[in-house]
Image (cartoon, rainbow, N blue to C red; front, side):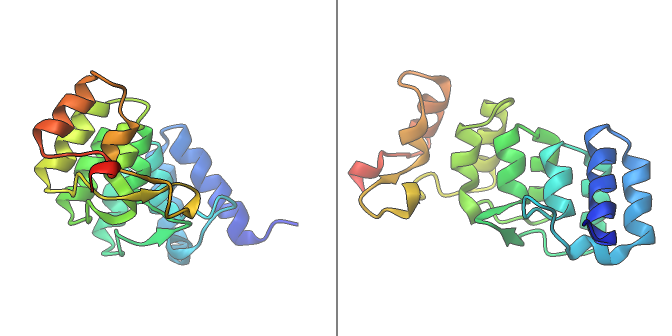
Length: 171
């Protein structure tokens, strides 16, 4: 049986998904304790709003002076926004001081659904580590960098190489 918090998080997520940002913010204002709780995916409201590029909600949460670098399940709001192609959320989070090297945001950007090049450029402009190593399945013998996830000859590969990226095999 769902708890009251679970139901509120569900309502919040529904509002965010359907671009009803005023209603989502109202839920957070009425139940400020909700900000630190996670849903069934182990994501808290900033991660959810970032996933759906719900800029007014991301801005509201940033204005609440929450920890924008908070992570959960090896992810954080910035890496989720990068992976989902949520360019506005990426910009907002970085401008608010999000650490571009936490939770492999550059790898997430390379794997983005949309706005891939713009997000990579934005992370590069915020001095992210292009050679950050990612362990596949937490296996030290299976290392990758953002470059290793690029399609050969792609614009992403060229952009990363221009900015000093190398394959994990070269590190």
